[in-house]
Length: 459
Image (cartoon, rainbow, N blue to C red; front, side, top):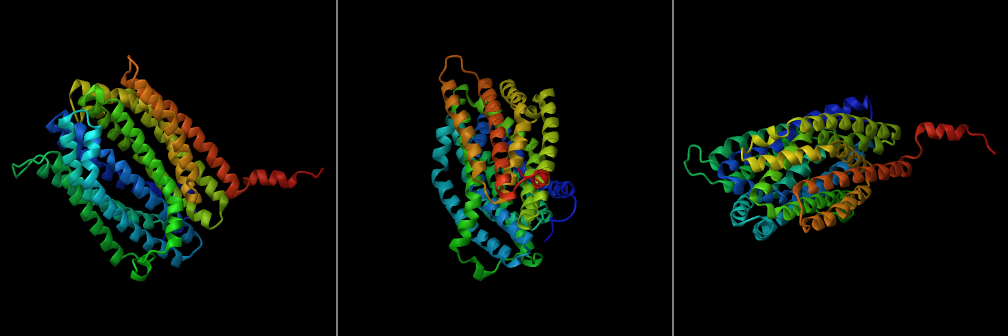
């Protein structure tokens, strides 16, 4: 366990964010590696894997539900120096991860093909996406175990073991992808199916590695069979914090799904360009997302210890760091965005769609960083419902206008990108207003305001 209630906050954020970013970078390489080898099978294969990959947002929504609740409650317990409570929350999280994993496996194999066929631009795209998702479903199911274990560690201020496991699993995926996808050495390329299988095998290995770490080296929280029995009160507390955060990611899934649906008339190349651009954007966001993942642990421990000025300082430091990073990324995407797309495809139409997407969408990077930061602080405070309300505002302002635009005679792809920029900016302002209100409710007046009020003469 690492005490985050003492010492410089900016240094603590960076110290946690760096290994988180490294781990997330390697985690993202799962999809990049898959996309790189799948690209050899043409635009339909790229579009199929990209379309099927949107199902991962549903899993991310569910894992966020589990992970956010676990980090918040464990960090609060650590701040109060209550090890028994932290351990109980961890064990209940492990139980929930097993239940969610089994449900994901069943739903993915039964409904995955139906979903891909509905979203795909043509039959070839649907076939590629269905094959990929069928073999990737076990990996998606095991994500819950990874999140339960990693989130408990993050709540205690420990992030290095998770990073090491993520690096090892990606190295394994990088070794398996060319063999299973492209047929290196075997001369039996499996195409998109091989990409999904390589990822599932790698995730399985990651779960085993992290489980061994817990069994042999972790002592602050550990698996105890009596504590695995579901306890309704603890489960409700985890879900009360986690469900709204999961709802946020589910709304992202809806928004991404709507985009794929409204642009399907432009063909597989358009879906492929958008898919590649989206993957590149996710990779670019990693440093800021790492800060957003570090903030709940730092602020959460200080909130549990009732050191409220340090909670406010965590927000200021994280917001400033994310704004600077996002501004740099915006300038990069304004300069030569096509370089990122050409790494995966040289098809002119694919490159044009992907590069235009990155150039336009980069104007909302700073706003997105603020949204990430606010979301992390909501998690730290143990109330993620305002964050869900903020995401819902974007769902309302984006989905209906996007569908209407798609029915107009002169509809074009950049119109969707510009609409996204406007709605993300509005969401960032909404998140900030809601967070400041939550600060007033849970932290009271800032010290300078409290001092001013105390010194104000009576009238």
